[in-house]
Length: 158
Image 1: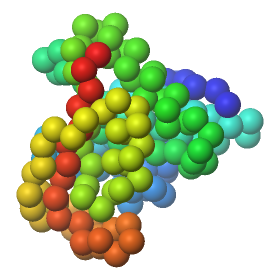
Image 2 (image 1 turned 45 degrees about the vertical axis):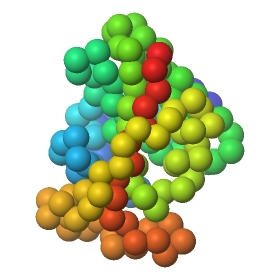
Image 3 (image 1 turned 30 degrees about the horizontal axis):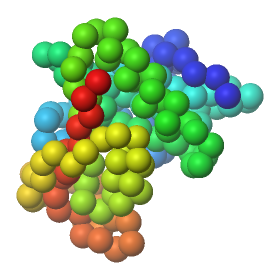
């Protein structure tokens, strides 16, 4: 398992990864519309040089926002390692806060981040309805058949 900057990987590989796991590299959340293939980030590469984990983020106004996090092999520390890399990068840029947004159905993400020191900060009711206007492929139902409606912001002070 090797961690590298996503800018060190072929851009086509990053775009293909996002298409496979998100439908496209476009991420629509209440904080903005992002092309994840254009963002800063880190990837975990396996022995066959395949991406098995990837995180993207932006830094603005002394805050770091995680835009996406994927771990193909859960329970092996990939996600945790990627979050730590972002925390280190944010600290080097003098950020005081890391935040992220997930959806109300994403119980695994809510559990994952809270176990790593993030706290629930804000609920943005019906935010996903607005996002669907820009990215119609966002499904109506998510994990365990839960309707995807709201966004939940989590934060961690560093």
